[in-house]
Image 1 (cartoon, rainbow, N blue to C red):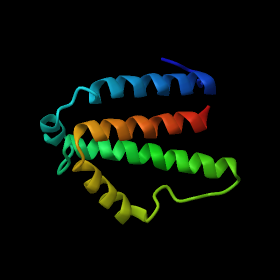
Image 2 (image 1 turned 180 degrees about the vertical axis):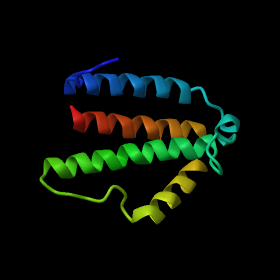
Image 3 (image 1 turned 90 degrees about the vertical axis):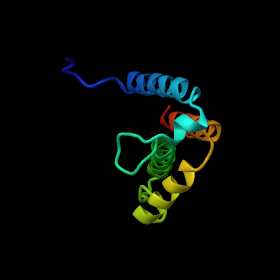
Length: 113
């Protein structure tokens, strides 16, 4: 068990490695697999992927605002817009969700480095 905090560069590296593993998995999903139920009540795997991409964009937005000395809410439009965005995203193809997640994660990693 680690008792000291990770160096920020090491943390960013580990997050990028986790993103790579996730993208390796999502890149193999078919539309049928994407539409299958997740273990989250009422959410398909597509909902989960849309949520992950939306969160990456939200965290990127917050990081950019913080670097500029500003504070912003996590989600534009609050919880209702978050929910609508996830529902919309869940209808996209597996390939589009994979591309969206890839772009969102790369942008987040970029602002963190």
